[in-house]
View 1 (cartoon, rainbow, N blue to C red):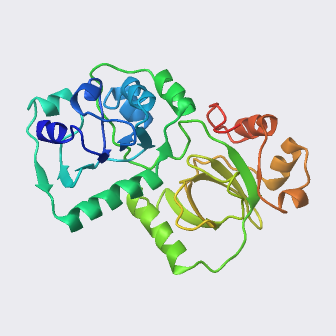
View 2: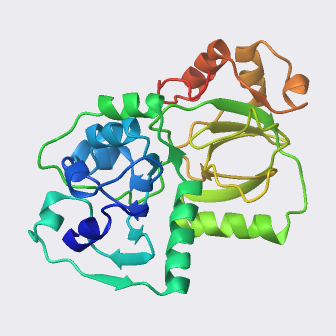
View 3: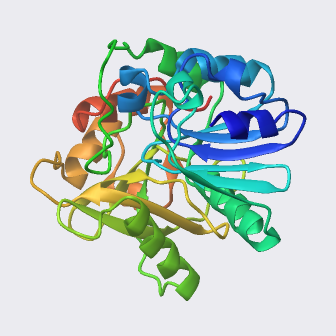
Length: 297
């Protein structure tokens, strides 16, 4: 890690590194325009492995930041050099407190692949903003805690989110959309069992679109399915989410949902809508979702 940090002085940085702890700003000379993706899960923040204070400091320096929930990679591209190894951004890794290993290369093809990997991690993550940072700062930190690297994909949101509701439409998915779902299953290690990945066809303008970690109330022919959005898209109308397949998920009928929202089942089947704050609060209670702030105004 010391070599990476020294090499980064004065050079453009693009990195996907699982954990970035307190003091990392003094180690890695990140600057405006650099792109860094970190593991921003509640577990990472609660253990102190990822520092909310550090991320705010970088954010105020105009570093472009993304919070990924299951990231465990350590990939850095510094200028025209790529580093792929085991070290996180921590004082212990920097000062040789632990034994780390990494490959350093200036091969143009490898560097291009490393940049592409970081971009893909950013595409599947949440852009860090003021709202996210306020939430991250509210997570209690347990000194000396261990990082629980999400053994299962997180279903319930742990950061500000919106709730959408709309009908499932039967479509023939393209090869690209099928590949998108397959990638989601691979990244989130949810090929079956308790979770399943779905690909949706959304018809929503660019100013109002689904984003991670929004919750989607999908109206199917005979039941309701509650899915969490992954926020990964390759095309404007390709959208992906995942849902619980076990009995632990709260089950509600369309009549219940329509009654709470004071709408008719037929009107809910017409089009996708993003719930306003009062409607959202009602569905938060109905589906027993976390009482977190709204993602967008």
